Length: 220
Image 1 (cartoon, rainbow, N blue to C red):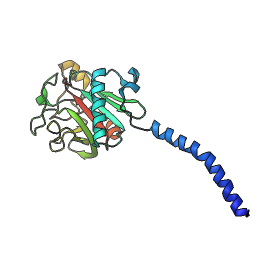
Image 2 (cartoon, rainbow, N blue to C red; image 1 turned 120 degrees about the vertical axis):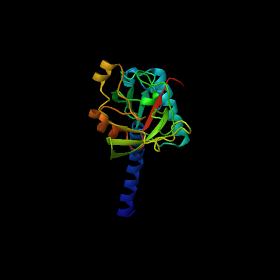
Image 3 (cartoon, rainbow, N blue to C red; image 1 turned 180 degrees about the vertical axis):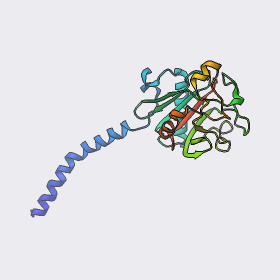
Image 4 (cartoon, one colour; image 1 turned 135 degrees about the vertical axis):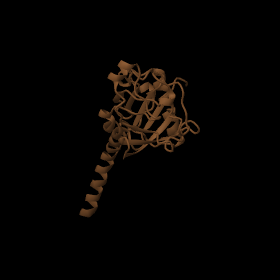
């Protein structure tokens, strides 16, 4: 056999030995980086103090959107529980790959939705109400409220006018827990899920560009 043929045969033999191992390693890496929407794989510590029922409803909604092709491998899931009073932390941002709880925060609701508690929700322009359901995060931009993040509602008739209504995540000085405790309610928006200015930029950068946000209002 010629020297070139011997070398080719040796390379082929080595490749046959190494390839399965490399393939397994790549598969393991891909699996560890995959979006995980299985409630059972999340322990109580990684969930934070969210109501387990709300967490399960949000995960199911996200899984349905993924199955329908409305989203592709979202990296984060933000959950807002509007059934809690605005004086409580009621927004959680989860990394769907590492199971890390990235943010545990206060969030405003629309002034048309209620005072301390949000009890009314709408998809209509000029309602000044928050919307419920599942949203996909869009692009970040600099606007009237500074660094902000556009949201696209994925539930027809429930929140699909979010972009038209300019329902966005942004920082706002009225999202102040100290003032909220004194007056009994957090400052309110025109329907946007506004957050503390101190964390707005970091939160937006963590969830922008295809993440998911689920807003729960007390009705499954």
